[in-house]
Image (cartoon, rainbow, N blue to C red; front, top):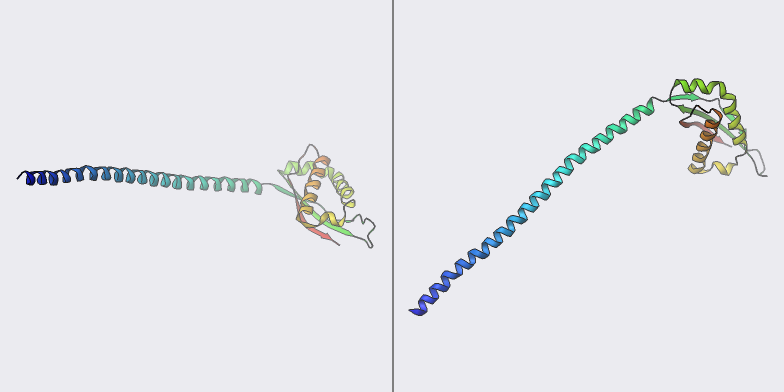
Amino acid sequence: MAVDADAEGAEGAAPAAKKKGGSKKLLIMGAGGLIVLLLAGAGLYFFVFAGKGAADATKTEGGAAAAAAQSFIFNLPPMTVNLNDDGAPGDQFLKLTVALEVADEAVMKDIQPRMAKVVDAFQVYLRELRKSDLEGSAGIYRLKEELRRRINVAVFPAQVDGILFKEILVQ
């Protein structure tokens, strides 16, 4: 009988031990579930509000595009110049049609009386270029930036915002 009582006590102790281990598992699984739920909530929060931030940035870019659309374009007459040939046989020409991008009409009116200075600055610079100076997109970009700098010097205190090439022909 004593053996039976020990066996019953051992069997009765096992379910109690099982319950204690089961509650630990349940607690760990509950904590893990809570962490997953919190991470999902944080992800959703960032997803929702990051989407609104991108929409706000798009609206701001749209506003910048609208501001750029408010600029005025001032067309210059077409220019044809001989390029510096560096001893190469034959003549090399550059035909260029340019438009100036300015902020408002007042700047356009400031530039008109100084147009002779602008054309002179262009002619002096363009005649010293070689055909190799105009090759590739980097050459055209350098040309654009140098022309913009020279125009801004010629029309100071007025300011030209950008140079727009309407036609570039190198022959």
